[in-house]
Amino acid sequence: MPAHGCLTNLRHLGGFLAIAGRGTISAAAESVAASQPALTQALAGLEARLGVPLFDRRHDGMVLTEPGRILRVRVERCTDHLRRAMSEIGARPHLAGQLSMSRIRALIAVAEEGSLRMAARACDLRVSSISRSCRDLELRLGVALLERTSTGLGPTRRAEQLARLSRLALAELREAEDELRIWRGEYTGRLAIGCLPLAQSTILPAALARFTVEYPRIDCSIVDGYYATLSRALGHADIDLIIGALRRGDLSEEFEEHALFGDELVVVARKGHALEGRHRLTLADLHGFSWIAPRTSAPAREYFERLLGELPQAPAAAIETGAHSVMRGLLRATDRLTLVSLSQVRDDLTHGLLCQLDLDLPPSARIIGYTHRRQWLPNLPQQRFLEILRSVVHDL
Image (cartoon, rainbow, N blue to C red; front, side, top):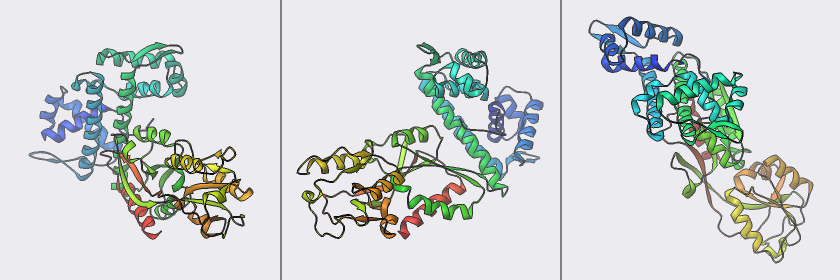
């Protein structure tokens, strides 16, 4: 669940937006049904917690400062996600104002853990506290969020929809705090990247090496795994982008892809392998050797299956892995072969750890790039990382 520090009161943030839109506290107070003293106090508290002035107080009204404009963009994006959530679950848009941080966090925990009991354990709260927050949310929205399952009370489909979009909303508030720290000259925050196998050995390490020199106080988190797992994390705003082979036709509507370069598949083996140095190998020459297979869900797997289907005789059962270190270790310790992205083993080939076999393969060009959520708004360090990533690819 996204962590938050200063921006913990959605009602106060709604008041901030009202002031930004109406230009005066009196007009804003009337629009959000709050007293002027209460709204003034809420704004003062918000500015104190953030450590920045959000408005210039002038004789003719309130004008947003630069940090105020930064916050407004993020809070409006947060509000848009919550209103969209209301629409998707069949609640009235204005009921987004009935949400509170504690209720949202309780619901997200239930959706993540699958039951009230597990959510309470994850949050270190009593089951009754989690239940009360979710039931209160049900009453306010007029939508069933809990249902009985074999393991107890768990989230309904609407609860999962609300939780997913609420996570995106809270991510905007986290980004707001990061951007305001950056505005103050404090270059802290996070960069969370989902990394598919082919980016692990060369592209990502080179980009991170450059990035961390420029932004030593940005926390970088690298998550590797299957595309299905990483795409779920991306959709929940747990990570900012995924680097690897693009999905193209299989891409979810909620994501956007950007190409970096074209890549091809090659067959590699250990240095000193019996097939090393032999020219114009054919599939028949590969007979008798065992294989290391790409992951079942990897784009290269279908190509691998077709290739093995053309061998004169079916090979022994393959070892499946997407972990580069495991693949390299197995190749160096055995006479196995593998089909792999050239960019993934480029350093291994350069340093003489592996060798590429001279085999004329059918066309296997793939597009490598990065994927992020549609309408993602990267902050300054995130933008810089993407610039560095493109620069690294250019230098390959």
